[in-house]
Amino acid sequence: MNSAVISSGDRSASDALGLWEPKRTLTLEAARKHSARIKFMRRALLGICALLAAALIYQFATQSSTIILEDNPTESVKMVNPRYSGRTTDGLPFYLTADTATRTLANRSEVALIKPVLEFIREDGAEASMVVAETGTYDDVKKILNLRTAVDLNTDDGYNCQTTHARIFAKEKRIEGDERIECNGSFGIVNGNSYEINDNYRVFVFKDGMDAIIEQGQELGLEGNE
Image (cartoon, helix red, strand yellow):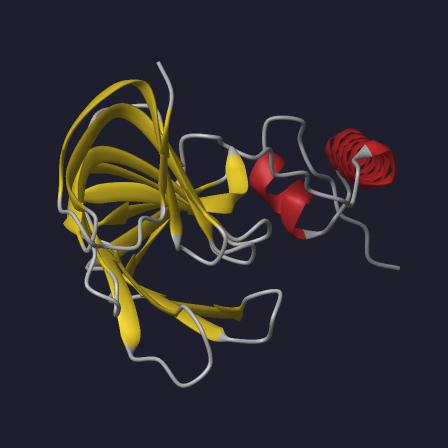
């Protein structure tokens, strides 16, 4: 029977034969610790992912799905060469055009006009009459045109008036103004500090003082008061 004696100093031979058990034991222990660390890190990462998912779900659940946009009253819409139309109480048409019309969110029924022009028919079969101005506003719901600056009225029956303010009720076919007006027509030349034009644009009412050069022999359609 063969036998071998290995001295304690010859570690290399023992390692080669796998006879050094303490070193193997240490290697297995390190492997177990490494596996434990991997398992711990995996569980920690899964836990963090679960927390992030829960946070995202909470954010989506508590966040409102409706986005509310608040109106800004200073915002406006500008139209170039707008055209509006309507009819008077007796069914006759009128047309309003301008270079530009600007509508703001603060007042949706009214537009601000640059160089407005109103064409209207006083009575059936008559030619169109016209009012032009530099600026104005138009209420498309109430059909009221408020003109300012260089207002010029010309009617088919020969009346011409200039003023700086005219509030035209297009459906009712009447005009009123709070500023001075100068008119000439079949009655002559008449000026007033304020005025009304009523009854199908036929009756001129001059208010707050007036001066006139009246032509004799003409049928007058005017009234005056102090």
